[in-house]
Length: 70
Length: 157
Image (cartoon, rainbow over all chains, first blue to last red; front, side, top):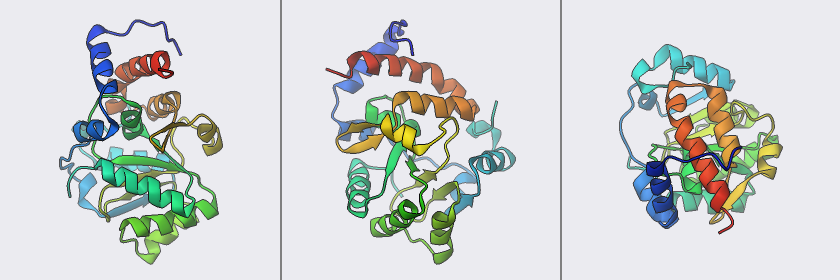
């Protein structure tokens, strides 16, 4: 934690603007719906471990979705 | 299916409270409740993994409208660690063992409550994203860390 670290001005303006909005309005701005190939093609998935989920993402999702580990 | 709405988050809060479900909003959805300005698609919940809580969770999810089969309900009760639900009124990820957080109880002690929504502390959200080490998280972490700093400076008014 470094609360004295400099926050870039544009981010600071965004954080301050968001803080002034009611939570319901922040929800409207934040939650969007777009189709994600493969990921959105099943109504239910379960994994024994988070590691198994991460591995499944790497093996099955397109790289551009960004779910692969660096 | 449309985007996740505030009234649906309220339903989670109210239904889970009635069923006594212990959970925390985590990930970007949790950060957004704390005030982080960004976009995301679904809600991520970090439920306590005790058997009693898992049973309460199943009951709560069914009341919310999730069409859980018996097999799926059993998955939740018997200890799967990561569950993606797209069989209800909104998409939901249940993350029982998020990367970077050792125990639910620790995160619960550090939780932040916003309008009745229990949310992981920003440090826990950051820790889980850093430990997951996905490309999408790497890109968002610098801004999320700055938000954490902003939030710490301003949280008391």
